[in-house]
Length: 225
Image (cartoon, rainbow, N blue to C red; front, side):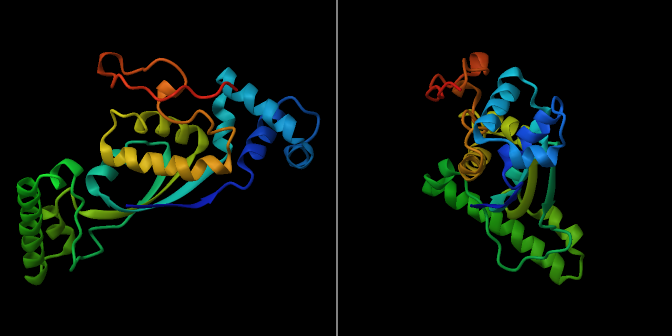
């Protein structure tokens, strides 16, 4: 798995604070962006986040490149609808040297691992046979398993990114998308430390929201703002 931060809104915290402060300021957002002190930016962000008026967080966005993950993972990822995606197409890209993502529990069991990889190899051989027989990749791809590696680019605004981290950093999330979420958070946090201070599973900010499905092992509580 390879997760990289390709781009983010420059000075995301200042951009968000300027947009929020504009509602109550006699000057424009461009002037606010230039003139607001760091203290003022922090004060505005605290008000925005603690009040729950988080629509202003949509004024900053992040773009990530995610490679070497399974189709099973990206099918979960694209359920986050308030985001933009571009994924390597199995319709237009044909494969000669396949790679498959093996779940850790399967990897740890030699017999299960062999069974898993053999099934993937058999599916791929059938896929190649169809291609070699003149069938289109868009039809042959129906044989490819969810374990097939893929690549995807995702862009989320900060509001949706925080929601994504809350759901997918939870220990109850599926292992692969949780690994992706934690890596994305690791990359995003230094660029906007105040905004992402409490980012992650809901238990970082209070009681677990999973009810009877709780893992029983919450994150340490985050620092108070």
